[in-house]
Every structure is written in structure tokens, then in C-alpha cells.
Amino acid sequence: MSPVEHLITSGTFSLDGGTWEVDNNVWIVGDDREVLVIDPAHDADAIAAQVGDRRVTAIVCTHAHDDHVNQAPALAERFRAPVLLNPDEAPLWKLTHPDRLPDGELAAGQVLTVAGIGLHVLPTPGHSPGSTCLHVPELATVFTGDTLFQGGPGATGRSYSSFDTIIDSISRTLLALPGETTVRTGHGGSTTIAAEAPHLEEWIARGH
Image (cartoon, rainbow, N blue to C red):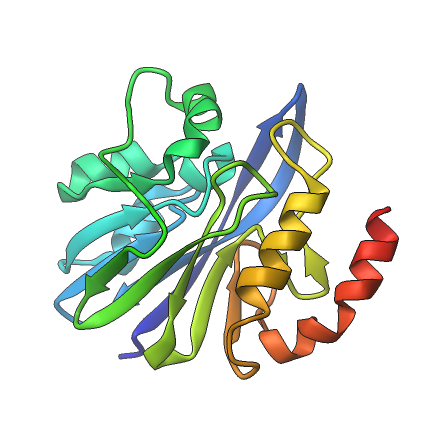
């Protein structure tokens, strides 16, 4: 069994009065005994079916846009697992779950461990105030949520986002990772750090 499993779920993303149809990548990291779920989107039953009878150590949200957290409380209850989120995401989290707080925080330097695999917490604000990536050196992988995609940075045209901040996060934090690192994103296909790094100046020019 691969230590990284991938599930695509479909639903909507709503913010600032608009709603859009979206497909989301849900990532499951671990082994045949225990797993960690990243960005539990849209379909709790499908995610639970993928997990099966394995123990869930945590439900980690890279950020709190509703399409990334809408099933977090339901799965937390089902699996008796904590929801972890950067506290700077509180305003966005409360839009979706006003009566339920996350169970724990994500912070720089923290390492989450599941099945002997270490996921290093990298704060990468910009797409949202507390957007967070998870770097797994031993798997040469980084889970970027909506911070970095194949072809460029995440969107910054809505509330609580900043283009200058996301570019700084990508250039300082993500492009510092080894070039062969696979970038597993919140939507769409995967890429690598080496594939995206040459385009930084182009993104900056396009963004301004």
C-alpha cells in the first residue's frame, strides 16, 4: 500500500457571496494500520470508506475555506480524531463551523507523525491568513493545499488573501525545498518544485 493515497471529491466553494463548483484533492497518509487525513472535502462517506478500519490520528486542514473543511467535524466525530488548523484561519473556519472549534493548532516547526512518517508544518500565508503546507522529506513530497498549484500560486482575489504574501511564502518556503519534491495540491494535478520554480518572476509580473 502506498503511504500516500488520493481521493477526489466534488462539491462547492462559497465565499464573498459567490459559489463555485469544485473538485478537491483529499490526501490520506499512513499505512495499513493508521492514517492522517488532509483536507476532508465534501463527501464524508467516501473519505471514511477509503480510510476503512484504520485508526485516524488527525484530520489536518491546510486552510479553512469551506471546500477544505466542510467534513472535518463529521469525520472527527466518526473517527474520534482531532481537527488541526493554523489559528490564523479562525475567521474563515467560523464562517463554516460557527459552533465548533478545531481541536488543535498547526504551528511552524511542528512535526506530525503517522505510521512513522513525519509531516513538517510549514506556514505559507497568502491564499488565506493561516494557509499551511506539510512537507514530508522522506517521501520527497509537500502537500500545498491552495498555496501552490501546477502552473502558479493559489488565488488571492478574495477576502483574507494577499498576492504579495503568497508570493513571499512560495519563494521563501516552498521554492527552498529540493527541486525533486512532488507538490500534491488541493485541486488539480501534481507538479514538482523544480517545474514551478522557474516561473516565479512571471507570476510576480502577471500578478501586478
